[in-house]
Amino acid sequence: MTEETWIAVAPKSAVPEGEMLGVSAGGHQIALYNLDGEIYATDNICSHAFALLTDGYFDGDTVECPLHAGRFEIKTGKGMGPPIPCDIASFPVRVVGDDIQVQVTPKT
Ligand code: FES
Image (cartoon, protein in one colour):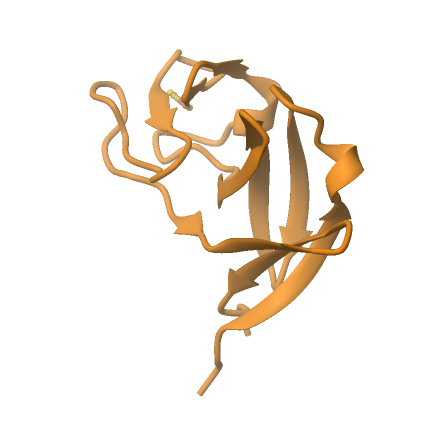
């Protein structure tokens, strides 16, 4: 059985306020967002087709997919209507020193 683990993915300084960054951890592609100084993490791959959300647009507390303009809530991964068929995962985040750590279940 694979257990959830905290993985350091980037220094906090790499994600300034209002910016996002794509990283990988435990076999997941993850988008980090700095929303008003707080770091959030979701899947980086859109649930509609293959597009990286970090190639899209960070707008308020949502991210807009670059391919068909589907939107997700940054804090929860909740899809905000068509063409999005389902939510994306969001991941717990903590900052230790300058390290952003994300809690994931590594893919085997
Ligand atoms: S691939 Fe993201 S909205 Fe279509």
